[in-house]
Image 1 (cartoon, rainbow over the protein chains, first blue to last red):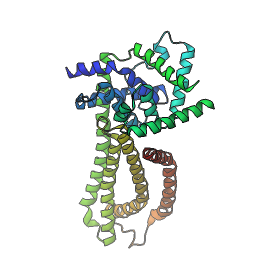
Image 2 (image 1 turned 90 degrees about the vertical axis):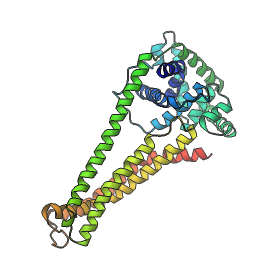
Image 3 (image 1 turned 45 degrees about the vertical axis):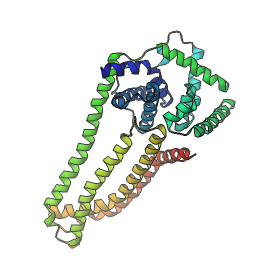
Length: 160
Length: 200
């Protein structure tokens, strides 16, 4: 029963895992590894989820924390289940312009610091300050300050 | 591309991702199973190897401890045994601190803080260990010669083939320390930057 519920919750929220792993990895191989590591960590921690927050909030938290713990790890090729993470391979209708725009978007985000990446990701996901604060542990005021700084940083990158 | 466009592209991308499904029931189960087995295997290999080497060497020295019949050989024996026991324990502990962050219990901020401080501590530990390696080798050389060949390198004034060990050891020590500084300086800077940024 627990496994069925877990599979259902993961499938419902797999886009979160895809996006977090995309922001915190530099190659497709890394992304695949991080993606699977997040799925594994979610499974390992699933029992501790008491339903006090939304499942998506919990998944964001575990995914971001896994990305932090992943920073130190070597690539572990050969330990993966084959999955196709390349967006353009999965979406037949995707056009080249869209693909380029997504690549550019990731390029901008990847220039940010580890902390900033997490905050901008949650902001782009439409999370309000309360939700971002609950996931990250920063105060709402601090989130506001950091987001202003990130926006300035991104703007200066866009101008260059 | 304007700043507003970033949000628009993200939303477009999100819509596309939402339409597609990567995971199947089978792939989720396979990922969790395979990762679980790999992790158990990695942990046990690392810990068993450390424990095995330490226990074998330490036990051998302790069994032959009576052969270390001068105060400096006894002290060398104690140093070697302590080094063999403490360094692997601290090393495994350091790796575990970094490896086992409370993924579900910590907030992002706490995880980053623990990761950065854990990294700093671990690198400092590696630095200290590298400085201790040379005294360890000298002590090990003294007791090994005594235990295996019943030869006291100090009192018999016969250092034999070991005449080159001291200068060579010093050169290796200098090169190793330099290499460690180069190898870990980037990681150490990153850890420091994370901690500084967390304070802002």
